[in-house]
Image (cartoon, rainbow, N blue to C red; front, side, top):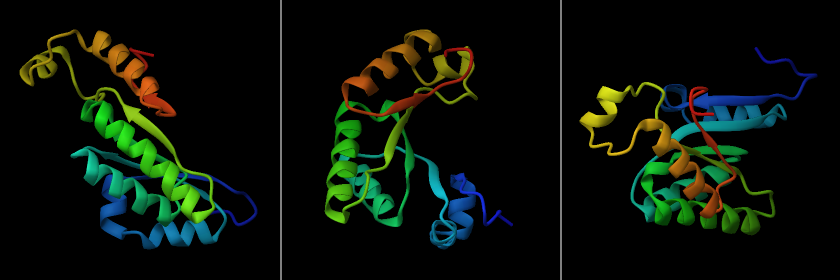
Length: 144
């Protein structure tokens, strides 16, 4: 149960969103809360752009996507958020790039082809996210 007299920023992760669906967003928005959809979108640019547009229409205030999707994907997401917000007459959602999953250690990172140390890749992706117009990044405290 959420307090009715206090407006919150509610984070909804992938498991909860997939289990409950968009109804939870409608419910929480109806109570006046802001929604952080931590869905970590990662797909081809067009698909991510359409996903961001849909989540903007749903009422998300903050959305995560993987920086490893690359510059074309991130730029497409930024443009989709901007255009969708404009069409709806609402503030566009803020977009955060996931730099590297916190579950990665050096061995896992190397196993998937990581050439740079994780800490260097995090910095590289953070700079790229900024260049693409993303609003911020998510990284572990080790790379912050």
